[in-house]
Image (cartoon, rainbow, N blue to C red; front, side, top):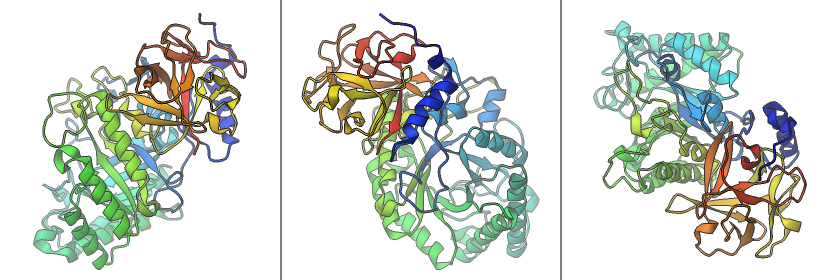
Length: 524
C-alpha cells in the first residue's frame, strides 16, 4: 500500500536543498543526479590538473538542439517533457560541445553560425554546464575527407590565411566573452588528421609547416580574444580513436612543430574505428606517451537497427548502448597518470523531424518518441563499476543502508540518515543481459529479494546468479531512477516512510511516487 508523500518533499527545490546539503557535508561525495531539480556542481576546466574524479567531464555535442526544438522536437524524461540540457545535467553530465561554421548556408541543418552558437552557449551556461567550442574553420563539415576553406577566404596566401584565422578566432572568442558565454575548451579544427583549410593547410600536400602556421594562428587568436577572462584550454582533435600508429604519427609531429596545446581530442566510433578493445589500446598508449589531458570528444553506438559486422561487440539495444558507454567512460576515467578528461556523445539530440533532410537516428540517446535512453545515465557516470554510490530516496532524503550496518547474509535493507558508513556505499556491476548487481561495500553481498512478491522484504545475500539479484536502473525523470528487479519487475520502495531504519520493500511501479525514486551520488 502506498502512502502519500509529505507535501514538503513534493517541492523539488526544497528536496534538492535538503538532500544536497546532507550529501555536501560528506568528504569524497560528488552529487551526480539532480533528482528533483538538482544537478552537478561546477567542475574545473579540463587540463587544469587534479584527479580524474574532479577533472572529468561527460556530455554531448548538441549543436542542433535549438534547430530541433524549433522544428517541434520534444525531449522527455520519466514520461514528461524535459529540457534536454537539464536532463543531461541531472544524469551527471557537466559539459556540452558546439560546432561553429564560418558562414553556413542556413538551409536544412547548416545553421551553426556565430549568432546561433552564442545563444545556445548562453543557454548551456545558464543550465549550469560548461561547454567546448569546436571551430571547423569551414562553411560546412570539416572532417578527414574534406576541410574546405570558407568561401570568403578563398585564394588567400598562407600568410594572409593565417592572419585571417587569427583575426576570425579572436573575434569569435571576444564575442563569446562579451556575451558572458566563454567556453572552457576551444578546439582548433575538427578531425584534422590531414590538416585543415585545404589545400593550403593540407599536411599531405603542403607539409607540416603550413598546418602548424595555421594552428598557431588559431591558438593566438584565442589568446587575443580572451582578454582578461579565464583562458580556455586548447584542444587538437583527430579522428583516429582506433589507430595508434596514426595517432602517434600526428602528435609526435605536432610536438616537433612546437605547437602549444592542452588537450588531445579523439573521435571513436566503433562502426568506423573498430571494437572498443582497439580504442582502449590507443587511449592508453596516448595517455602514456603524451603529457596531455585526453577526451573522446565524439563517440556513438546504435540502440536499434539491423547493424552487423566485427565492430558490433555489444547488443544493438538500449542496454547494449548503455554497456558500451559504461565501459568507454570507465576506461577513459582511469587512463594512466590521471590523464582522462572525459567523453562526449555526438549528436544525441539529432532525431528525425519533418522538414529536415537527415538525422542521426539509431545512434542518438533518445528514442524515436523523444524519451531519453538508459545510455545517458552511463554517459553521466552513474553506472561506473569503478565508483561507489550512495543511493538516496527522493521522498525521504535517506540513503539505502543495512539494518544496524550488518554484514550478515539475510540482513534487511533499510533507509538511514545519510552518513559516512560503508554500508551506505554500493558498487554497480553490469552483466551481459543488460542488468546490474548492487553490492554493499562493507560486506560484498548483493541486493536481493528472493521472494519477488508485492511487499517482499529486500535483503543482502551472497552472489547466486539468480535474477532476484539482478536490477535495472530506469529513468524516472528529473534525474531520478527506479531500481527494478529483473525477476519480478517490482521496484524498490520505502512505502513513504520518513523513519530512520525503515525497511525497503518491493512494490509495483507507479508514476509520480517519489518513494520509488532514487538519486545516485558518487561516494568515492
